[in-house]
Image (cartoon, rainbow, N blue to C red; front, side, top):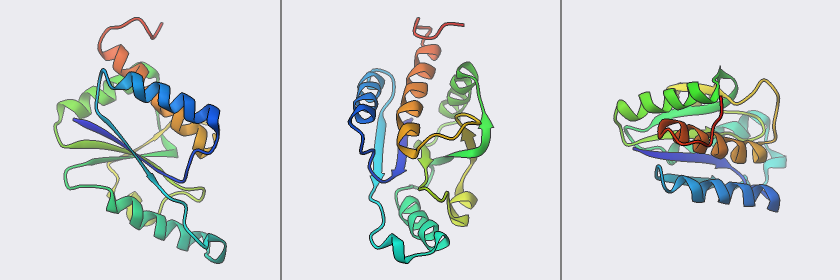
Length: 157
């Protein structure tokens, strides 16, 4: 099973881009990861927050294929420890399907259509992180989960 990571906008900070690249490189040994970056909307200043969410939602859903399990990275999602997240991933891998699609929305969240299509929501913390930082943090946690599943010594309890 493949992992898709869909996000809105560019990271824009070199230190975060370097971190993302490092963990994506490490992940190649464990799972196929497709990182899909949807460009920021043009003329967004002329749109309401709802219009922005709707347009971003259409773009997000256009990247999803039939059979993908959609998991939103959302502040109101379920929080997992690293071990619990690895177990969650193992259950998803065991259930089959083409891909697990983890999605980071734009600054105003997700449209109702994206929420309706989602199979679940995960929160990385009760703290708020920038959308750019969430990407690197998520890739590190995905890498950590894969090493836990393989019994490798990266994670310490």
